[in-house]
Image (tube, rainbow, N blue to C red):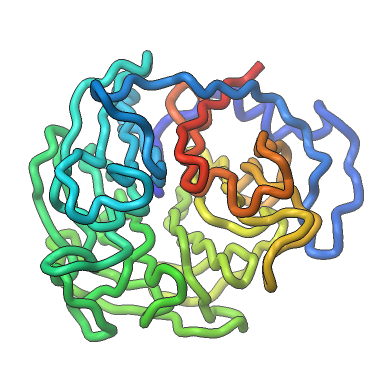
Length: 345
């Protein structure tokens, strides 16, 4: 997920000034609150689609840093692009007009995405097939492939290989690339670092639940200080690291993180797609699904966009989250196959 270089003072006051909405209420034992202010209205009709198509599983929404475009990633038909020719990447203007599409035939299971400081789009492929998958692909804004990380169809823990990569973020200072893997607790549970030219540099993390250990790092983002925010989903927490892999702290107050987005002024948006009153083992029972919003500086949570589907519908919330230059929040919904746009009232 991305660092976006915008963010006006009005939105910051609305979302950081929690006392303007309500007095503090004691959090639940794990620190996650359901009673936060909900200052958004949800739209489900934004964005044109190519003729004759409908949304498949929507996995990522990423605005460009210049505030002109919004990229939406979905899985071609239903929940997979395997054997399909449809373009999984759709490029929009802010009015929702479809400007372009690309990426057809390059992915099995497109998953996470980021737009870097130069406006290039990076998309991960969290499955594999013959000569496809186990990769991160970099595109320019016109859809031309500029770089691939990993080997198509070949996964593993060795340097130069990835295994079902979940998400990616790029440091705007030196262009270093950080990849979070593996999906559904595959072979690797780690963060891999590459130089700007795609050279493997290092990796950190391994399977576990202790400080610095990872269990399905599903999403990754970076704040203005260059700290890495890793959505350690199976452990129901966000872990903060230096870029060299030094563990800093963990946050549990944002729920079970499927997606993280951080703006340039350090507002953090965390999508929890899996919590609920009656969820599977290890998930956060009693917590509402949705997008929690707060400060990446101190971890205070100040607002909430509650998932509109019944609480008993498992894993139905947004997995990916993005925020445009106007402060509109986009939820990429996998299970229900839709794109949601949330507008400040």
